[in-house]
Length: 394
Image (cartoon, rainbow, N blue to C red; front, side):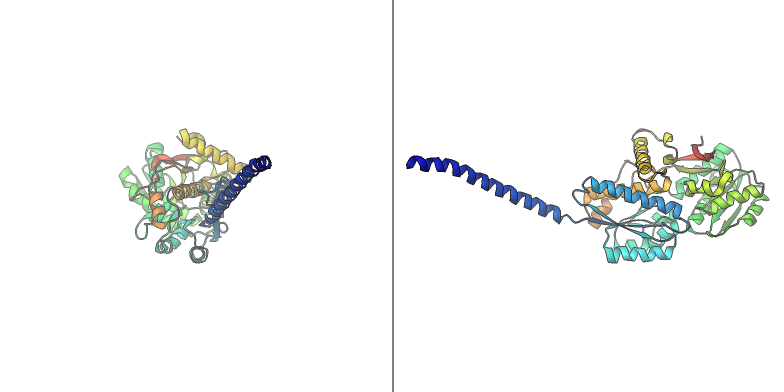
């Protein structure tokens, strides 16, 4: 009898132990599952101009944000937190951007906002985002965006007009070796920002601005302004705006027989300008990020740019542009900050501020307390349109 009892114990005890281990594993799995379930997604808002006149910029930004968030979430998210991306289309109108920011903050409870696409839309939402004290990753270039007041919470991924204008001034003074030029600009805040900076920097480079004129964003003809410039003695004309205005100016210049150099802003760094201007785009020179001419980048940044271009082409069957690059930089800089700081407002802002040597598409970013732009003139190159394609202008 004792022998049988002993044998039963030999069989039962291991089974009991296995059962306990199984329960422990089950409890552990349940606990892990609960932890994962507890990791709420990070809600991120985006306000972009998917439709309206600035759609060639905003559409590329929207596509990039969707692509990058898909990749981040597929890789497991940010320390287990997936990103919930809420995109609002401001239709290229500042009043719609204001409505969009209210929805994102009050209804969706986002912890950060990417946008806007244009300077007018970005300026329109800047104060509301600062009041809510959440970080904003702006993708527009107007200088006032990162200037006081209410600049504590806004960071920028587009190259500001300040460095783009420096590239243009340098090209005219040392590349073209001219002394006089004229400016025609969009009357909105982006165009005004560039025109003001051009007039500020020109005298320091020995250049004289002989004529300044403007156009409204939805104007369809600029012959009147260009005729005045034609008679001003200008040796070049700088056009500061985003499409379609600059493309119309290029066509009008050709119709008027103006052969002086056309220098654009970085707001025409997409194929839409070439499409709209047609053969009038030939020979146009403008400052741009190295994404338009990847061979102009080097080291790790060139690798990052090429990988992004490949991913975008594979996903959408079309090439990426400068504005897609601004969106890539915005979501990836924000992601790295979330990895370090989580979703706390102040900690997240500090983590973004502490971003150093981030190899982005628009440049190599290093933010600081007093520098929410993070880029230098060396992050841009001068680009010329030749045979409908971009090439570096050296």
